[in-house]
Image (tube, rainbow, N blue to C red; front, side, top):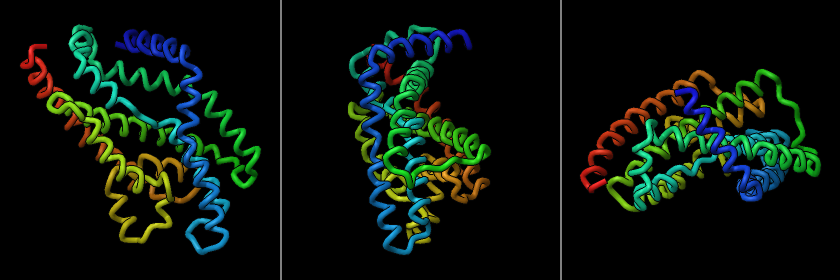
Length: 259
């Protein structure tokens, strides 16, 4: 299994290297947190918020880094595999298509990394308030949490993708889910500025743990680590069980259609 995954990863890296310019544009397209950084730092300077203007700058810089590690697009790929019949050929291979999609995402992370580092370096050069050096403990724990957030995000979207066995536009489910993700994940505003009731409800959902949680750890902003990892793990188990159930049911549905 390890050799198969290594071969898949190497093949996907070679494929991604053929589209370096496109990968750079993908990295640039996730620069929204860097734009919002300027908005929120100015707001923090002129108002009373839970985070100072410097903490806002550090937070959104870390949000950008987390987004580079956790962006996912598997639902659109899987949907096309089902609709266009490509899944039939992938099922003939001695490995679950899940792993092929996962290796493609990991290969894209590896290819994107130099461009992301370049963008971060360029931004902190022209925007000094964002400059800071995270503690080694925060850095390592933040990266680990960001990778865990990526795995949960991938699992969530792959689970929604399995609805393609029954509907032609499974991506519409993800688009509706993305609205909640946009507002509750901490992508456009740190959850520290939300009303307390909204924050308590949000922390029971998976969304804050996809962006806010790892970004806050990287930025050195205090968070409840125990609650964070417990909720992150609980949602991971929920989506893993749902994913495997939909996969087994979906394969029966797919074979029933003549695949």
